Image (spheres, rainbow, N blue to C red):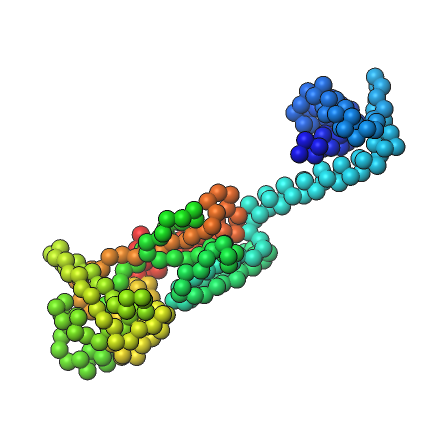
Length: 300
């Protein structure tokens, strides 16, 4: 590394045609500049510069060495410019991981960012299972709920609620009204997990607490498919408020026991880097945050 520094000093001396000019450009003293060049000459065993009281002149060896030193300095300047451009202007490929249900929000959230920055490309990896950010080279992942301790950086984008929902047709066939005490006896749709059971924690309008374990008759590893089966009238499901809102508003689903609240579920933007986030990641997270703040079913 010391050799690289001396080569850069030598190239700067030739560029400014004097030790003092190079010293001003590098923020060094003229004597320190001269020492760097002399050390480079001693280590190389050749004279690079003819010195006089009035000017400097390159030797034949100095001319050849200078070509490579100048190219090295130019490459370093280009690398620095690329770092600045990556930091300040979004470009390249943004690799984003999201769940199946959230994938429909990618276009409205990031469409304007992509339109304003044509050098930015987007690749979306859609999977309800957690993807390893490092192995998949993911720049930005959307995660829900509690996050495991890790070296990743996370920014909270908002929160959603779990809504108990059923289709109007299912409610007609069910006949009896749905009460908090009758929930365990209903036909449930649930997310497949190792235990095979759903845990439901509810808080009533007067602060009363109910915790119950539910056995789903139909399960899936895909939350969107659970919602589709719920709309189809196959049973009752716990659905995220951001996902269920449109179906509830359109009458395709009915929210059950709205006076009973479930714990909120945080929405996170997770990245493998804590510092020096490139512009493509920073601006994408900002765009997602702005978008989600305006969505029904998302709470700050």
